[in-house]
Length: 101
View 1 (cartoon, rainbow, N blue to C red):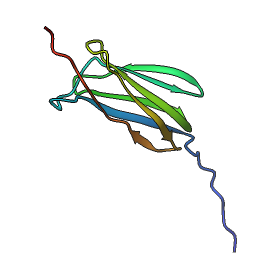
View 2 (view 1 turned 45 degrees about the vertical axis):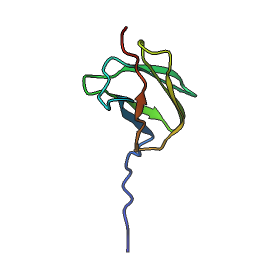
View 3 (view 1 turned 30 degrees about the vertical axis):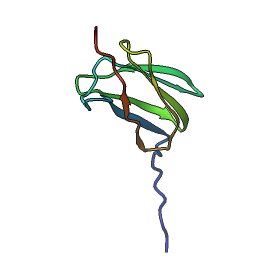
View 4 (view 1 turned 60 degrees about the horizontal axis):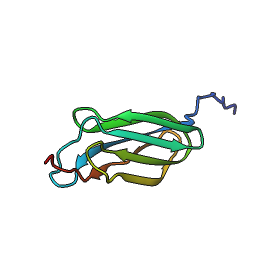
């Protein structure tokens, strides 16, 4: 009996995506700066109107995701976000905001 081996492309990258919300209200935060740092360097994204962001085609490995709010001195960091081949990893964040005075 003969079996044939079919070569298939294996995924070697993954994704990180998430949603950024206001810690007090739970409302999505648009225009937030999200910085991704890993062995390959840094990348940045802005959240959309739904507070969502994504980084695609990431090499397998461990990343740090940082969330910055221009209206607050407090920022949030998610260390040790591990990307696996073919996987989509969620890294959501609730950011404290300051009301304008």
